Image (cartoon, rainbow, N blue to C red; front, side, top):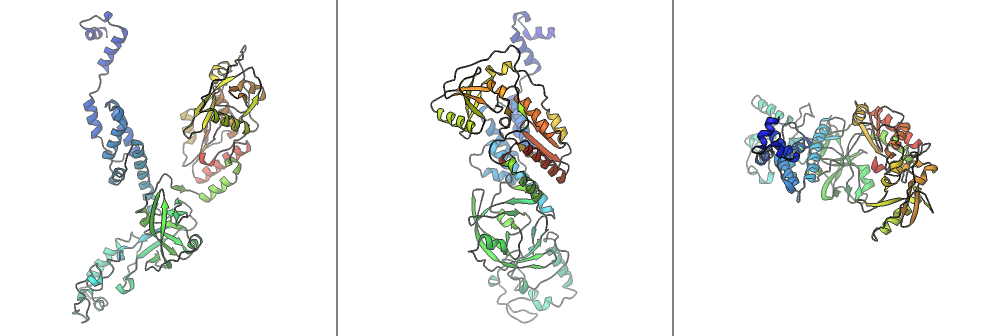
Length: 568
């Protein structure tokens, strides 16, 4: 090593170099600086690989850019490489339509579309949802009139309309399209008939096993569909668009050719509208006809999009379906599309514990925080810090709110006084923090209770299939402080002194005290993991998951804790 160092310092001696210079020389020798052009070459040649998710692809790009020295253009460069290197052309086209595309926005769009494609594939392959399959034997109105020449165009444009049939002698069609000839199959026509039926069958998504033929007069103007409905299954993807200004809950079905609504639901949501006659035919898998009352054109509003789209009305009382015709016109935000699993049971459980989800601050029962000082500790009483004039109204309003909520109580004097630090939140509201690090924290006796490691949490969640996350909003403030300890938590403001009656943020032992309390509340329930104010509930199946969730909510309610629904 010394010989190497002597070589590196030539023509000087190692003793003539400072410690910092020697460290720099050794670092340059053992860890030479990568070539920027080579690193950038590797970065720009990297594309999304087979089986690699978009999140993994982005992580690789960020790692490759480490030594590229892109500087302030790092995010834009990664965004460009992400768009250029994607395997999916559909996602690329979607990103190219965005103006002012940022890296974060590109990641959100691409990952949501990737997830939507995977979930849609699962959904269309499952027989547990309502589906509508299109039979392309009569695919469009342009291809239906075949009674003149069997070519898919309108009859008035057919060159055979003035021709005489050599088979029956009638005017308006040719021999190969003659119906009289078709009703008398022979050896020459039979192979052609079989081939024609096979070409139809392979476009029916394997929904029909029987072969059937219909005359053109019977199918003209119709669109044969196969409708599959599984009753008693509430699982699926749901959205709530506005139809003519009224919210309607619809099930997203990528297998449905059209969007449907039952007559009963239609009369409730749009009583002033009258469906127009429609020649579409809906059939069940067993070829039973589903009566169609008609079709109307409605104004659909969803995700800041507004379109006029057709909606078909059928008899009965069935869930509304959002089909492919609408999906082609409306871009869904799949992150906001809820996959409802055991929805009825879940809602029943949530409705049993309304107090847990009610507004207001929770009040933990039977557990009180008591702070202990080190021997010989001396009180510290500081003066109030000046507050900017622009912030004074907000500080005063927040003090008043905390007093009404029972978090603070005004006092005239105290041996302890901690200054406050007003912090502005993103939403423009104010958060008052006590600067306890210079007053109480140095003299508090440490509490002994371990916080769980990430390995402990993952081990407790192992084997789980369904998950729920609960966030105890303002978690610490739901714990009461023993009256003997409230004097230590006095804050001083331009409005005077206030004492905390609840456990504030900023106390050194607050995380330990709260974790200990949550451990007592949950009592080591299997499938439930808690890290401070965040709870994760799981189970090996739906039944176990919902059981663990109900027990957790029951215990939270019994101890007076609250969770807002937007935190659930």
